[in-house]
Amino acid sequence: MKVVTLNTLKELKAAGEKFSVVTCYDAAFSQRINEAGIEVMLVGDSLGMVLQGHDSTLPVTLDDMVYHTRAVKAGNSRSLIMADLPFMSDASLPILLENSARLMRAGAHLVKIEGDAWLAEGISHLTRRGIPVCAHLGLTPQTVNQLGGYKVQGRGEAGQALIKSAQELEAAGASLLLLECVPTELGRAVTEAVDCPVIGIGAGPDTDGQVLVLHDLLGITPGKTAKFVKNFMQDSQSIPDALAAYHQAVKNNDFPAPEHCFQ
Ligand code: KIV
Image (cartoon, rainbow, N blue to C red; front, side, top):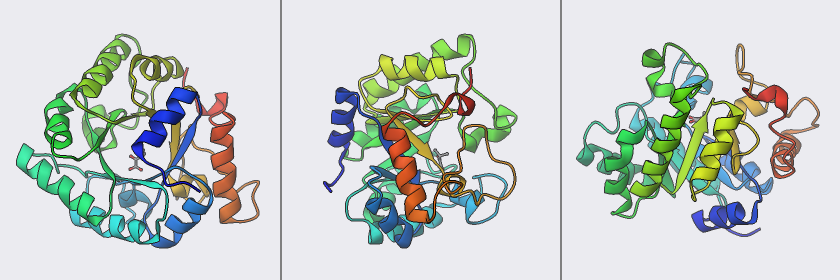
């Protein structure tokens, strides 16, 4: 299997082919995810919830992210590794640069940052220095306290503002966009409005790629899961089978199905 780069994702978008993304936090899963053919591994700050047991991603530190990025890198042979900048790691441009550099030194191929149009300055600061960035828009879990909960974003007029933000962030240098928890129509509109690949989670079937949290995909997340989650272990005999089933379902555009989407 070929090594995946940002160019691979751009080529897939141009060819109208979907790609799959899953969160990963250690070397063993990194190998299994590679074998399943999944293009991108996200070292997500969701580790604060699924590994550390917190009720949000806010307690996750940069040291936590560096530790898990190193572990994922150790098991990786072909997938693109994207690592999350955790809460408050972009307090100023020098801090943002230093924190992003630590993630890149640990093995990330690009960093992901949550926010909105105001991220533009930080994104161009990083990309000018050789650090590719994915901008995470829509439901941004690090601002859950401001959003008043994990709710669908971008309904009504807010949708137009989100499309504009996406275009501004692409112009600032973002290599990828990630859209979380927005209506299907908005997922499609953003994907069409930008040239860079767009990854969706709860953003409908029309984004270029799909991402799921590993523990959700394997059906081992404690408590209630979101509407956009599918447990791929239910019809699989093993973890490698479930990962391969997820990858195939994304490639065939069978996932997400209407019951996983917001209208
Ligand atoms: O941290 C994470 O796992 C994420 C996904 C929810 C996209 O950002």
